Amino acid sequence: MYSYITVGSLTVIRHFDQSYEGSDMNFESPVNASETFRSQSHQGYTRVDCPTPYMRIAGLCLRMGTRLQKLSWNDARAYCAAIDGDLSTLDFKLEMVMAYSKGEWPTLQLYSSRWLGARRTDDEAPFYWLDGEVMPDPKSSLWIYQDIPGFNCVALNRTQEYESKLINYNCSDTISSICQLH
Image (cartoon, rainbow, N blue to C red; front, side, top):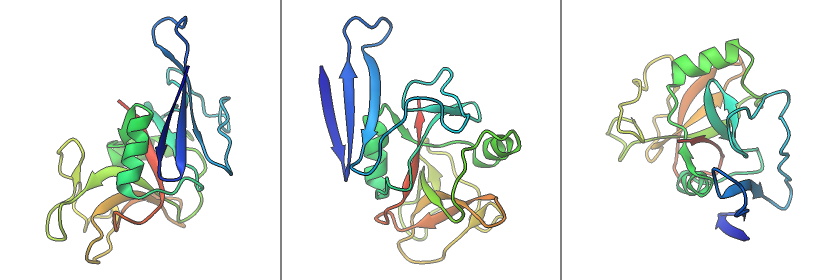
């Protein structure tokens, strides 16, 4: 049995196998006309203890959107929900630095950005993770803060110095995302 969920230009296909013990789902894959999901390990990064399409990075089950999967923040969140997760609310500094130092993070293009599970309600409000926790101050070294009206959703950005920084964009901008299995 198959079910299809479409979010923006992406479609999630689920194949259900009633004989599979422990879970009724044995395959999930985002489908895009110009992309095919590979179920084997990705550049040496394993899916140990993480169901497809997630892989273990920094001790979390994450799904990295590709450069072809560009969605608004709301559509990215709906896509993550369609694969039983949400936009990632990882502890940015500790988990990301550890992942980079261990070589666990997949190669990201320079200046690439991916939506995270964080936003603010208006230009004057603080940024919050989806779990309600206040984010680090946008004036801190963790940010590339853009003081532009309407830039209220948060992404992870890879800089030329190979560092990860938080960056804010307009929520309707279309970029890749990071989904986290909960």
